Image (cartoon, rainbow, N blue to C red; front, side):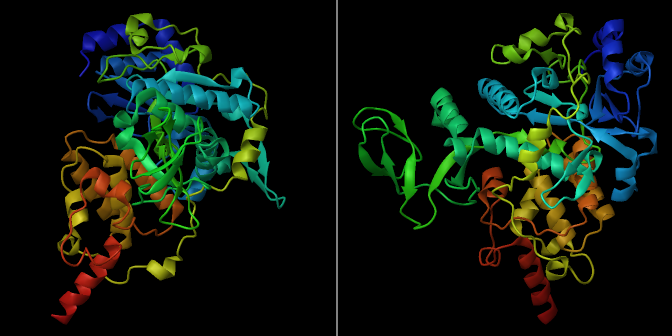
Length: 481
């Protein structure tokens, strides 16, 4: 935990406090005290509020992506309609948190270049170091038009596009910088920069034509054609060096399928968890508890050369902008239209609520399948993915949101590196607001089970596809007995 003499000395600086308070207008604020957050909702009206919290041992400050008419009216009991009435805007904030620092900078730089290609002027694009491992790229709400008109002529208030529309924008941008339309150029670049060994934990298998992730698939048995010398060969490897000239090449098609060409790409770790109602991100110039560094703005042209040491508390330059609102209204119009007409490759038709609705009492934990039991234990990696699986699973087996929240908090508290409280709250809130019952991923989805080390089976779970199917059969067996 940061010593109070360090935080107090930093937040006493008037230029720091003033710059932070200016970003908090209309925003819900969450104040962190070491390893815990204070009450919510909270607001910062004056720069003296920053100092007042610091004097109470506040270490960092976090704000919502959304802008509200009155943040203090927010509560966990509000319906989606109530939130829409309170929300007057939102900012597009891209959260890049890749496990390799050099790759994080490359991904951030590439996203900035894509925003430029979408027609955004530089003054509408700002970026800041997160304070620890990543970056936040921001486009202010003022850059978007007042309303969105779809292809059928239906008009939607821009403020009501949060969170689904904003999440689509994020998915569109990621697809544009590393998808089939550009030959997965960014993945190729990262593999060339870092090598396969350093990236092996963040590779996913996709359909080379659509970019759709193919869970549980591998690219073994592909044919390789060298682009430099046209040499052909087959291999079970994901990438190979050409036997003739040494060029690094990727597979061109799979022998296991007549219709799907498979290849591996890098999971860029652009976090869409941030795009959920009342989810928070670190306020600009705020300190970070673990690193002791400040979340400081970075000039667009210096992202690739930026080093973390430049974000020391004594090096903060408040003259650098972040989320400047002095932008041309509608300058992000092309980005909005392109994104809203984009269909994410992994979008699937959801089953109706009636098809998967749980009837009867909530299933007790004694009927849970082994992978879910193991997931409910201590995890070293994959906690965000586990949060997604557990929420959908528990809801699908009849648990109420109150039961789910209590169990997830108990689970999170037992983790060696717990998720932030705002992540738990934001995820549950978004799940409630969607109002959809969605089954958890099947057991063969490696990303959610095998990759985080929880894929263990008993005789029954090895025969069924989905955790909910397992519970139904266990209860049915119990009834027969």
